[in-house]
Length: 372
Ligand SMILES: Cc1ncc(COP(=O)(O)O)c(C=O)c1O
Image (cartoon, rainbow, N blue to C red; front, top):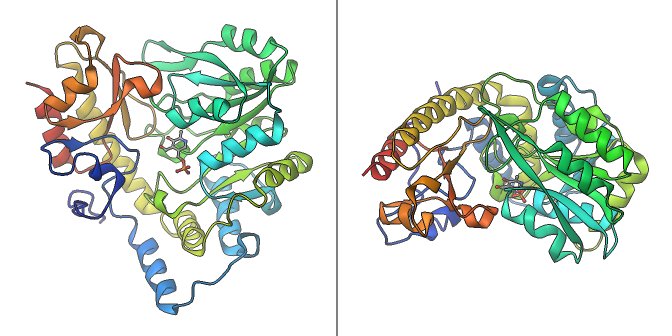
């Protein structure tokens, strides 16, 4: 019913992902957006709004259709009842976790982050003049988790005030289940460390497991979400925080006051429609991604020197290239005509990250090029 095989040509559209390798025979497989057209219902709604022709101010808190859509989505996806006024709109999840640092910590305090990790998450503590403590990601057989002993040790340090969790994890696609999250919250609570969880990839869990939002486990936490990754509308700069605790919510909102803009009407409409009219499209996308993931995991594991585990979520594959024994794994991939995200940016130079949110045909070309 939905066509994920025929993807639009993004060359010459100034797509960030395609600009890097413009004019070179390198297939871009880096930035975390997909090659898929977004759901037809979203495009139609945006066209209709465009035809109205006026793009004046809309206060996001007054645009109740989007808030209602989030309430619906949280109930449907995570069996989570939220109040509309728990929502704080943010013009991106990256601005949101930087706001959280300013809301809940002071210069000189420490912020805990996982490693390896999405580069802007690694950067956030330092650009806000905070200390940065690391907690390692660990792999047990095919499942990723975090090192809880390290979390305990880092949370116990007196400077630690905030843990910005990333769940599902980028780059490895691991998902922390409700038991693991209860452990995170228990450790952080004991040491008065607030948990702010970046859950931007949470609707891309591929194998039927239900995502658990952190604020469903503990109400004095912050949950960051968006329709952006799942529905391929990231360029519309619209995301939201769900903050059940009123004081914490007000602190978060104040941290953005006068700096972060209101999210715009196009992003609000895209969020509203994604969370109300696109259930079938979402399921079709997950099925397509599952097939892509399984193919790419098998292909990568058959290439001497490369190995990976199968991600539970996301359209991102974290590839360990240690056994290639090459100086520069990014250069190795680019010489073969594939442009992944460099592992060094995530804190692991021996790895790279491939994006399989593309047509099966494009993915085949990526796999074939790596296998020479
Ligand atoms: C874990 C994670 N957080 C945040 C973002 C970006 O969020 P936004 O574009 O809403 O700022 C990404 C994009 O790749 C991501 O992977």
